[in-house]
Structures are given as structure tokens and as C-alpha cells.
Image (tube, rainbow, N blue to C red):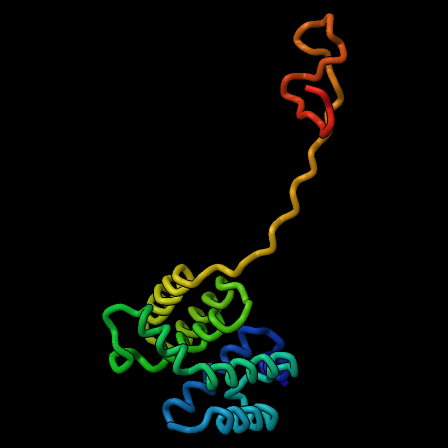
Length: 193
């Protein structure tokens, strides 16, 4: 067995591979006007049977791909509405279906999960460069960067208040007052002024 074939036979557990698998399912379902779950099941069976069209995903990556496909199926109208508001000067009919489906996948993940946006955008751009046209990577990157800026930032828990440092008292400006704190030293609570 060649190294390439050995490497291909090992299960891939990356989220990027799962995203690519979900993209292929989404694209095929969209082009064939087929139910996404049926296409997912067919693709999974083909992958398990050794079809080298699909990388062999680990169980964890396959579960993630299934979550993406299910989420996109459930949120498709919202995803498309978000993309229509974000994309300027292009209708869905004018866009390459490859680019549109990559954008749908990434938009679902950016709006429907807590995953940070940069790795989602990076994966989408890579998939666009692999499967799309010459300008697909730049187009997908521009749309998703604009969407990321337009989305509200997730609330982060408030950081605890920093602890005040207690400085040793040093002689003050007047050497005759050795117990006076240094002018830059913070006062501790309850300390007389």
C-alpha cells in the first residue's frame, strides 16, 4: 500500500474535514433538490464503504458534520435572510452555487454556535479555494468578514476586579516623616488619609 493510500485510510478527526463533508452534502442536496439527511446518509455509507470521494472521518468529526447538516436544514430560511442582508450587489441566482453553499455553512456556524469566527472563516475560505472559482476564496472571505463585524459579540463574563497591590511604606518626600506613604502608593482600605 502506498503512503498516500495509508494516509487516506486513517480517520480524519478535524473540524475542517467535517465542514468539508457537510459542504459536500449541502451542495449535492441543493443541486439535486434532495433532502439533506438522505444525502448525508448516502455520503456516510459511501465513506464507510471506502469511497475515496470522501475522507474517512472519525466518529467525533462525523457527529460534528451531522450537527452542521441538521442545523442548516432547520435554520435555512434564517441563514438565507442573513446572507441576503449581508451580500451587496449579488442575488443568489447570480452567485456560484459552490460559494453560496460555503457561505450558508459558515453563516450557520457563526450565528448558531459558539465557535469563534476566525477558524470558521479560515475553513470556509480553504473550502472555497478548493472547490470554487479563482475569486471564490476572496469573495467568501469578504462576505464572512463583513458578517462577523455585523454580528453582536457574545457576552463575556465580567473579569474579576484586579487585586490591589499593597506596597511597603517608604519614606515620604519629607525624611522627617518616615511613616508617610510614598505619594504614588495606593491607600489600603481603612487607612487614614
